[in-house]
Image (cartoon, rainbow, N blue to C red; front, side, top):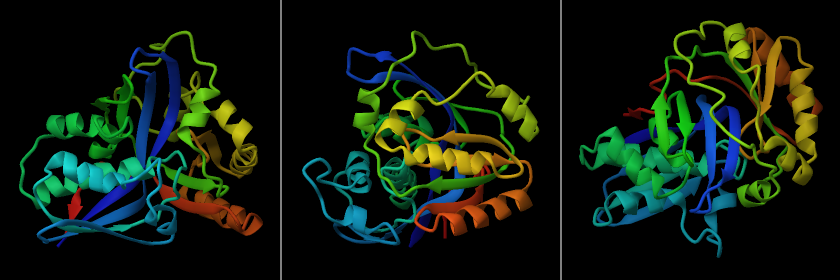
Length: 294
């Protein structure tokens, strides 16, 4: 048996360019991963199968016309369509939430099955396979801080970003990426931001680096889900929150905090004041969060 972590992806900023000839948008983003995760377990089997459990399992159990197959199964077949495995997905992350839940699961499936099946594919090969599955999947294969360009398939690892304290909050409003992108007023150009080197040593270094950035999808997402503004306000007004941002296409938002104790208190208060929201106190994950486990 092998157990693999599929951590939540967070866009510290997200800039979106013009629509490309292939129908995708050019993107520019600095992504990190949280300790809050889904988990995948792989066990030997002659055929490929997937069982889903966990608090958000019901959102994925029944195939639909738009999503006839879970991305975990698609990733497994893209990697090697002839091999079998009994896969269990523990779905802890909300679905359609802007934190790469399905992409994180697919990335973990590629990473884990590569080891489980002893295929010995390197990161470049896995990223190439991931790009055929979805724009967020290449970054999720690595599950480490990364600079993202192209439509998401160009992934450049960045110098370690410290494990800052976070609070993640979602108003339990699922958002379809397609509708948010369709309502977007895109930037006239990308390339103003550049990958960080070793200059981010403190939370204030990170705030300074992100000073001229933002999430271009935040405004259109708020049109579909006005509760996002409420979530951002709740995070921003907490003591010690130095940055409140929406991740991806929403509706999950995160706050970065000066100290762990302040994040713990903020998560407790927000959860009590908004019992219908999904709220988690977590951290930016260390670089080895996506590795396989026993």
